[in-house]
Image 1 (tube, rainbow, N blue to C red):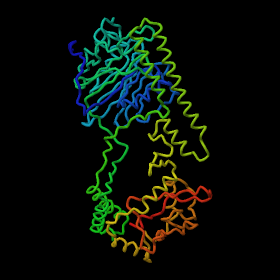
Image 2 (tube, rainbow, N blue to C red; image 1 turned 135 degrees about the vertical axis):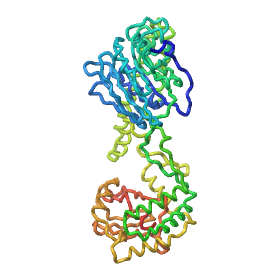
Image 3 (cartoon, one colour; image 1 turned 45 degrees about the vertical axis):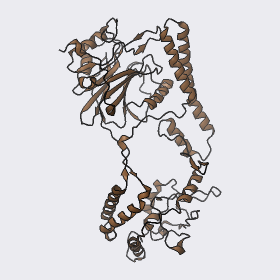
Image 4 (cartoon, rainbow, N blue to C red; image 1 turned 60 degrees about the vertical axis):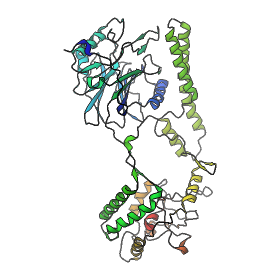
Length: 546
């Protein structure tokens, strides 16, 4: 048995490079306006783990977060209660098998750290302040380093001055004393709950950690979020293992295009790329040369640096921020004079006004958007819908604005025009001519032996390419309407041939070479003639002109 003095409160500042931010909160019902305010709060503070208690979620209630996985345990047989844990989607975790008890509601996960060790996080709630020691001991005695937080409804003078200990408080205190490793890190009189009737402040939301985590943990109180419990911030000196959903990307340096092109040509010649007949071997050789020269000329992004965070609500306006601030100020004023009925009434009014406006702002955003929809606004509809549901960060249906010669461009048609006008004539003058590959390609095109450059495109290949385009219509028969290209498309699939190069208006001056940074052309729709559907992809233009 360890001594009473082992139960301590740590305020040591952790290593800032290993800050792992957690949030603990008794929501007292996380739905409607309170849920929307909570989402906006997460977009600002960006915690990695959130321990929730008293969610009051029912089985039929569905909630989703863009940046977090949700593990929840709703109360099955009556309303109220419920615990949940939100885990950032970049973290690797496994659920903990916890035995359900009548006196303690709990749910847990195990997070993997960079050292391949695990840290257990448990969200707990003791509904009536009446829990058995065996039930609490099962939660506290963990094989891994642990963080345990929740509303225990326990009063004890160890964490609350002049408090009369109740059963839950005595049980938790004795369990901590009997534990081999668990330490209470909640400071004395932290003040985690404000009684909405009397204004009395108490500390019943507790946080326990293993000793190795407690020595460098910090804990603090956050602002009011509409519950009678205040959120608690916990920072740990640990580094979790992160997974990235985005692959690394090459950071292109345009000043090195000429060097890259020359090095790639040399590498492919050394690999005898043009002489390889097997498609798989050719792909392997090309990727080997490509990746090797990329590493010499360009840098690669590090996706692990990016933090996956909850996006802000698209309809959350300045008035929402003002009303949230006013409600918090009104609560502080009442807490200074809890016997004042006037200040309590002002706080209640501020809370009600805040909630009404949050719901109103969300409804008005939907109504305003829907009323302005037209028959051609399907992409805009889905963009806005995803933003409202917390998917995606670009709130503009047409993408970001482009400034060109002090003129703002937002129309997709104008953007495509600008793109083609800018890049159609861009080609570095110092790039060497690929005489070796040009001769090989021309030889294969004119050869009577079947090869990849003179075989007709099959219907199967066309079917595979259609899902990648915006439209699944039949191949058009009209040319692309732009000065740099006039590509007549045949009326049948069998008529499309890889050996048919695009006709350009520069034929008399030699072959047209596509710049390396212009990989796809996006032809513009002719809005004056609805029956003309330009293609979304020029087949193999760059392949033939490589």
